[in-house]
Length: 290
Length: 313
Image (cartoon, rainbow over all chains, first blue to last red; front, side, top):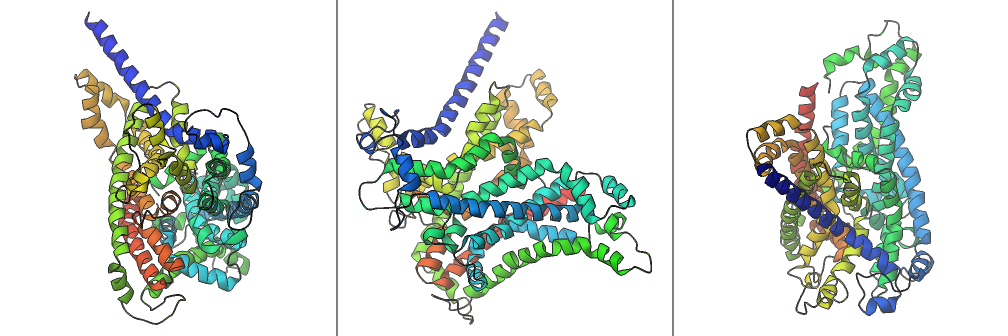
């Protein structure tokens, strides 16, 4: 009798846990659901008050408009050119910051020099810099370098502040590789770069993935630098999306807004779905001891 | 981290033979040379630029930077601006609510997920995906969800609850809570991930022993497990505070600091005064205030993390 009621109590407990988890999952999925369904509805259906339901007739009109017809300011080019801008910005910024971060992590762990701790600490603080404290001088410097308002300018900015994170990732990873390995290679006559290329890098594959994913997400999702340093047709996609959504003339095209938001979100969502494990590692790296 | 005394044993700083050739000397300096460009850009991009902003905040800069010195005039003007007061009050209100709700919900989710749940991987993916989104996307989505004419309010009314009202986003007194809702939605997964990692690090025999002693599961969590999660709490609190101080995109996309400037935050204030209102000096002063707030939270945190690390080795 006692065991029976205990089992029942346990079952009720499980039931409670699963329903709570399910409810939470619904809450987290709701905005995505609404975004996707709204983007597939014709505008009239949206205004007749269908918010949460499935579209009666699926149409990709809003998507094609968001991609190639929506107006941003006076230009009605859709998001396509801005998507291209973001790619042109993200790819070099990710490669540069990851490459430099790997070298820095290598030096900081295997070729320690006097003051290495201080250098590392100073870089670490850069991870937590509120960028508002540097955008004014950065705007001045970009102007003097002739990079103001351009994608290469944004690449430079994202590389500079990205180095802080990537150096942290690689430093924390390389510190787990035993020094004996590099010392033995040195006795065998391998030099600085040789050890880096043939011992460190092959061992660093997981952290390279973490670093690339982290930087990709950060740079793609950035808004502050984009809106501060670029304008017009040179802005990255987040800025263009915000401009589309904030158009105040005419009847608000919610379906185009949602399709635009989805287009801006798809690259990072895709990365997250494909490589979620690495994504989480980058996310929690700031919480792991530096 | 190893201290300097040990670093003599590291390859790069090994004792050199007396007649070091040029190439040997180069080899010795190579690591430092490789790191120099990165360090230099960080030195400029972080520290020099902070000093530069500080200088602008002490000058009479308005539309263009002017390099004179007017003392704390801009700070006086900043603290006499009602909009800045709104921003500071909002920051405290927002940070308090955002941290409280995110931590409570994240901890709850982590504890529930830690009960040998089937499909844990799928659920974790669902809870965490908002972290992959840009705040602009989050703001756009929630602006649509929260809009009273066609969003949640309308849906609940159509279910038969005619008097249901959820028009927070259009009212100055409540709009800031909408920013909290969206920010919580975006960040809970992150708190959950850190708490879950903390829970997984706890020795399960502690729980078993307490259970044998006859303690109920909620009691075990309240008096044994949660106190053990202290480091995770510290990390979550620090990192979420940092997110909330710099939150800019979300406010801009969701409410554009409105209605009527009611959701102004230090970050949006800084942007508006610097780039739109031609009051660069005030903007720089607000940026320095933000920096000081972040530094007051982050530096002790980094210091303690690094120190623990040293002891661990």
